[in-house]
Length: 275
Image 1 (cartoon, rainbow, N blue to C red):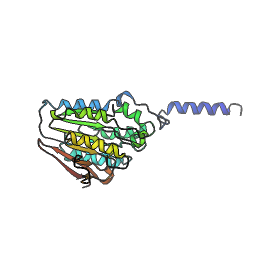
Image 2 (cartoon, one colour):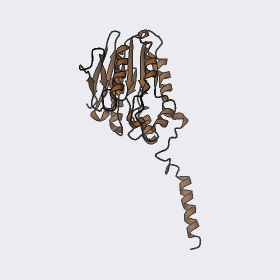
Image 3 (cartoon, rainbow, N blue to C red):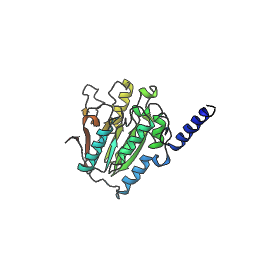
Image 4 (cartoon, rainbow, N blue to C red):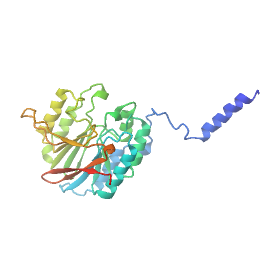
């Protein structure tokens, strides 16, 4: 009886040492191993390695968003894209996670590794929960960034308001990214929150759409809402003429989007991946 308690403690210690997967980490951990870091930079290197000319040529990209915890549906969408699309890359419109947890980010990255094209992400409001913002920074990189491909500019913009204590999105940064608009055949802006929704103050709505209008953005791309649709508000003043606004839709709705970029226009299509 004297040795019973120490023996149990010893056995428990040995169990914990031998079962390294039993308690791998806290669900609130923000630790990202080196091999999972800088995903955006790595994908951009892959994309640009296949583009040997700065001049425009037609191309396609795919869009998906808001998978949250619908991992089976996300996997089905990836398999369909691999099989049926010839896109150069994929853009994810945010809410890769549901609670901003490290395990959710890990599962997302594991699934996206099966995609046969590079992919790029914009941060969503759910991705900012718990330690999600820190995880995103390590795993993907800056929240606001841009790149140029086939003489087209892609601008990724964190416009989340509620989960950031109603802080104003960095419109100064966005405007600086749009200043050189005339150098490009097309400019695309990707931001998770559709600016006409209740998460945006009216003043933010006007600022965002004035920028889209003044710099003739080809397509404003959003997630957040899970049904795919396009938005046009004809009640706005004449000086604010909203261009094409595309809401991607979510895998749980069995959809993703395909965008075809031509010299003088941009065409988009909703793809149902349930066959």
